[in-house]
Length: 278
Image 1: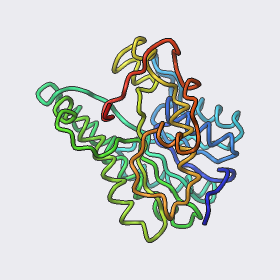
Image 2 (image 1 turned 90 degrees about the vertical axis):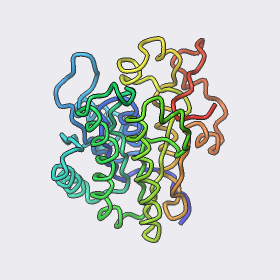
Image 3 (image 1 turned 45 degrees about the horizontal axis):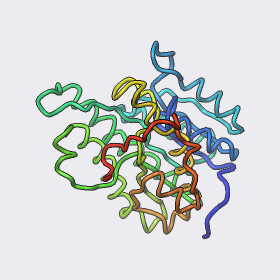
């Protein structure tokens, strides 16, 4: 099977997509006429953070897609199964799963409390595993099934582990889910890949958890991740699997040479993201 040209009529199940990168991926797919399930835990507006599953659904419909907002905490295994099955029933299947839901905490080993350690492992690694596994029976029926984890390349650099071990474990855990399942389901032509940004991305996580407005200015907009994810979803799932790629590299492979369009602030120097070798 060759590359498909559009996501029209395809169904995406996206975790944590009420804002940021997840919403951007959803809107890009919606422009093709895709069906998008937003499975996230924000139902009520947050005082600081924009977006709920309902505003995300509106944005998807406005962009040209069909939307199904589902309230979901990826830590709840029964709720994950129920949400995936409801999504598949609503749209007649699932073609693409995007594990975008993620919690960030850059504390060092002695600084982090156990509850916070457990939280980031449960959302990032365990949640990714549960959602991927729940989607597999539906993905088997798709003509071009993709699972995409928003997690870094498995580069075993001690300094990246030393700086924020709990978070690194959780994000590398997401990548290991892709690494293992890519091989486990290769014969069934279900693709598992991991995508990570080369630079920081202008999202609420960057603004409120990492570096405020200054880091936002040194970031790229979420659209670069959305365009890279879109390019991956169009690839042949039978051959394009087990890859750990950076957004910029994917787009360069698609012939993109102008990345200025993605700059949050064209006058600021870009900040290379963590887990990316300079």
